[in-house]
Length: 360
Image (cartoon, rainbow, N blue to C red; front, side):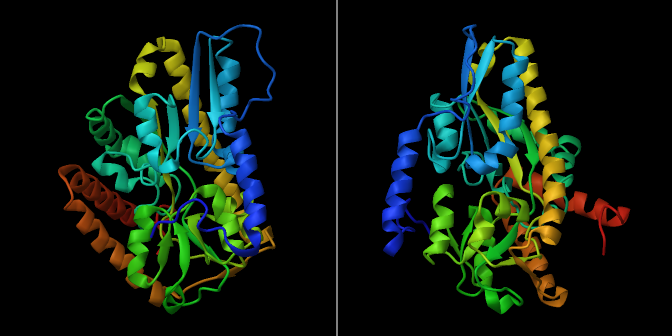
């Protein structure tokens, strides 16, 4: 179910929404580091990088690595960082990259509508992971990097560089969820694939611009979000407008990609390409420990959300439904079949390995 940017903003909140919109437009096109001290040396290369994240979240998931790159590049190159929807709408982000509107992007491929058949595995593919380390392990050690490289080799002017992990996917809502029946009719902000999966249990998935979500919850156009773990819920302010957090996740980690404009990438000297890749790894590492800290910290010390759980006897059918979803996805193409087979083999190995890889 699709909503336009302002359809979620109604009633008495319209004046405030207008103010927010005007402010957003006033800063449109202004990079995140616009107030930073300017270098006296004019850089030979200047890139624009847009992230899927809003400004509050972007301070953690991307800005530290961009700041590090700009220091390490020593005036040869500068990356200007833009947050969600600033230069291009999230759903058009890959096309904007192709056209050179942006030079690099950090995003899941699902909500960015990437034109590759494996984009369905971006963000949260249901129950494909249990922990954050599952994502880099699958891509780096089980062959997914190669599949992604081959898929993007067929896409004009887009080069795939890396996939890393973020947080798990849980529900934060204004109404408590303690049984499967409580999902019925809930209007929830979700990624496309996760929403498609949860529709069978009565959830009504809603898509709208990231920065409109909090207001949409306040005006009761949304009943909550299933977009992240609890760290993000607190960081971006959703914990201020929701009341409950369901501890049952539909996926253990978000998978996000770094993609670059091929022409701009090829124009860089080798040492700057290597530096950019190193800063991507720095970004991946930062998120691993930041989210691992936050997911426990906010459950125990957050203080704003009541934790709820669905009994395992009720939740088990959701897991089984995910396996059917996997099989249906495998039928879409040769690539999706390969990825599903790898995910199945990985899950089997993790189960056989036992704790701490998998806990029954």
